[in-house]
Length: 196
Image 1 (cartoon, one colour):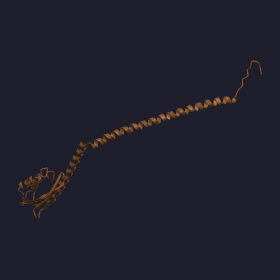
Image 2 (image 1 turned 180 degrees about the vertical axis):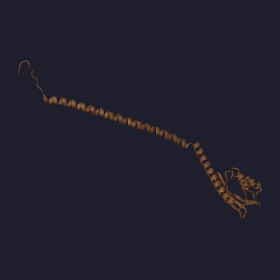
Image 3 (image 1 turned 90 degrees about the vertical axis):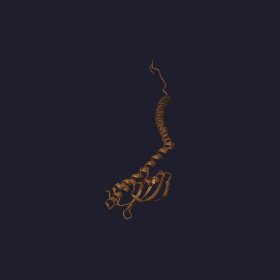
Image 4 (image 1 turned 90 degrees about the horizontal axis):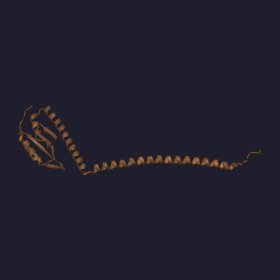
């Protein structure tokens, strides 16, 4: 070997091991960073879903409290009852109007002013249903309903006061439910009335 040149022993196996360790540490570090990033992302998604679930549970609890509140239940029942009553009134009035139209189209002895007086007697406290006018017997028969049973006698008195009927047949009332009383009336027309 020339002078001034120092010899150095190279251990290739040791060099390979050191290089391999650096490579392993570098690869491990990348894997740890990737794993931590994945954990962080999944934790964020879980936290977001959890917070949404908590908010929805709060909203659901508030809705359930509102629904189960006795005041709201009572208001709902009243609104439903009013809607049913209004539907019944409108349906009954529609049928009554159709019956009256058929009567007026025929040879009726009961004129339009008579019908107006007759229906005015209901005074928004009596619902007239299944209205039927028989020209041959000169009688009006119908089913009526009221929420206040004490209104029935005064209603019959109002009908008598119209002076349109010779007699009125009433056979008592039937309690349909807690808020409805039903009764039948037959009103015999007093005399022929040609009012148009």
